[in-house]
Image (cartoon, rainbow, N blue to C red):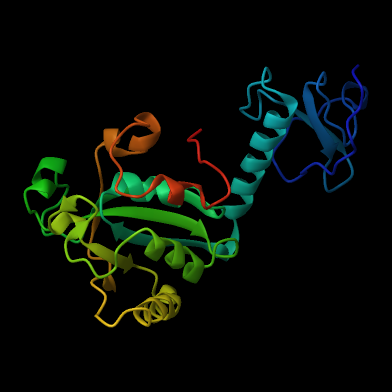
Length: 250
């Protein structure tokens, strides 16, 4: 067995496969060791292979640990009352999705069409004034990324005084908006909105209203800029790096 790495506390709340004590190295992960190991809350040893955790064992050790920690973080964020959902319209949804996913606390995003009269519109219908706004549905951990902070980032990526236009995109589908279903979000949304309004003499053009409806966009729009790195985006490349990491869809 290879040289042991620094002892670390492994996460013992992830569902794992029990193995005999002689088959794992307690509380260590090693370049040449195929198990993530530790103890259950009751003191019993456990271990899971990288493959069982959904991680390619051929990756560098540091990358395997990073991916495993990300899985654990995601598991934690899916628990409890801290999971919130908000809908943000900020121009072309390709760029807004990519921009938002760089921040810790974001659990899941889906691009779609919000607050129009027609059910399940196509992209072509939305581009021909169906009345929907290109919108990103965001599920996030309010403990890790408070609503006010999330909206501060949102305002950084848009021109909040522009009507039906962001970057080179014009039309009603590119209007900006903050939409909610959960009424517990009203106070933090209102506070963030007022804080942003104080920066301008003219009124903000950002809609602030309860969600009327939301329809997920076609599959090819989901994670579009990860699939097409050279695709058009109205948000500057510099803003895509302010979260301290460059997001890569797994």
